[in-house]
Amino acid sequence: MECSRNGAQWAVVEGSRAVARAVALCRPGVISAYPITPQTHIVEDLAQMVADGELEAEFLRVDSEFSAASVVYGAAAAGVRSYTASSSQGLLLMTEVLYNMAGTRLPVVIGAANRTLSAPISIQPDQQDTISLRDSGIIQLYVENPQEAHDTHIQAFRLAEDPQVLLPVMVCMDGWLVTHTFEPVCLLTQDQVDAFLPPYRPVHCLDPASPLTYGSFADDDKLMEFRYMVAKAQEEALRKIEETAETFRQAFGRYHGGLIDSYWVEDARIIILAMGSVVGTIREGIDLLREEGKQVGLIKVRSYRPFPAQRIRNLVRQAEVLAVLDNNISLGAYGALCCDVAHSLINDPFRPAILPCIVGLGGREITVNSVRNIVQRAELVARERPSVVEPWWVDLRPELI
Image (cartoon, rainbow, N blue to C red; front, side, top):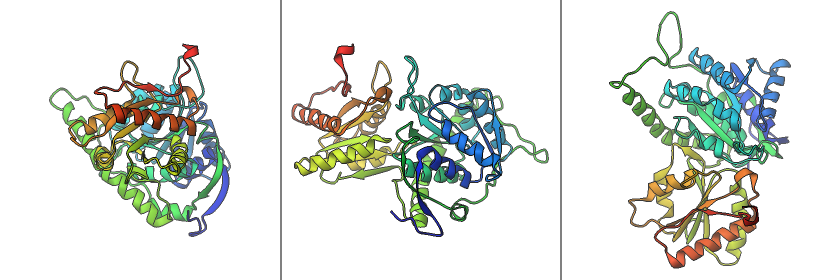
C-alpha cells in the first residue's frame, strides 16, 4: 500500500483517531455530537482539535443525539459543511431528523460506530443500528478497517456534496473492532485532501437574498415525486461511488472497492457475501480453505445503500451457493442483506442457491472456524438443493435457549 506522496505518513493510531483526523482534514464548519460508546473517541478528538486551534470549526455540545442531528441539519441548510457521529440507540434517536435530512437533500456526513440495540442492553458491535436506517434515503458505506474508515470519510464528503447526488452519507464502522483498534494507518495531509476535496459550494442554501423553504408541506399530488427524486439520486450515486473510489486510487494509490470488492470469485463454487470488519477474517479463512482445494470466494459489499444489485449478479452466476452473512436480523424474517441479495437474483435463471447466515449479533465472535462451518453448510446446500433454506444462526449456543 502506497504512503509516500506529498508528505503522507504511516502512524499506529486508534481507528477513532484516524477517523477524526480524516474529518478534520475535510475542513467541516460545524460539528455537533452527543457522546455514546463506542463513538465517543471520534468526537472527543475533534473537540480537542477545535479547542487547541488545530481545526477552525464550531463544535456544538448538545443534550441528545436528536439535537446533534438537528444542529448539523440546520448548518447544512445554511450552506456549511457539517459532520456528526453516533452509535446504537443514539442513531435511532436521530431517525426523524435523518429522514428529513435525506428528503431535503442535505449533504451531511455521519460517522456510525456500529453497536447492537437494546434490549438486552449491550455495548458490543453488530449492524442492527445502521441497518434500521436503510430506508431513510441516506447513502450507507460499510468499512473493513481503520485505514478504510479514514479514506472513506474523505470520499464521503466529496460524494455527498456532488451536485448530482446531494444526499447524506453514513460511514458505517464496527464499534471496537474498527473504532478502538490500533493499526498502522497512512494518514493523508491537508494539502492532499484539499486537492481531492474542493471547498464546499452549496447548490442550495438559506439566503435572505434568495429565499427558499426546506421541508415544506407536500400533499399527495407532490410527495411521491419527492421520493422519486431521492431514489434517482441514489441511482446516480451508484456511478459516483465508483468514480470517487477510482479518483481516490489515482490520487493516493489505495482502493477499498467502489460499490463492492471481491476475492477469489472467478472459479468459486461457494461465495461468501458480507460487509464490515468480518471481511478480514473471511479472507483468512478462504486462504486456508483454498490450500485444501476448496473453491471458495468472497464478495465484500461496501455500498449497502445504494445497493449494488447488478454488480453482485455479474459475480455470482458461476457459483453453486451464495452464503450471505448478516450481522443483523429482521425478526420474523431474514437478515436485511440476504433479503436484498435474494431480490436482486430473483429473476436470474443462473442464480446460485442462497444460504442465509445470521452472524455476530451482540458482538458474538466470528472466527476462521466459523467460516469453515459456513462453507461446510454451503456444501450441504449444494448437494441437496432444497427449495427453501431457512436462516441459519451461526455459532448459536443452544444451552442458553
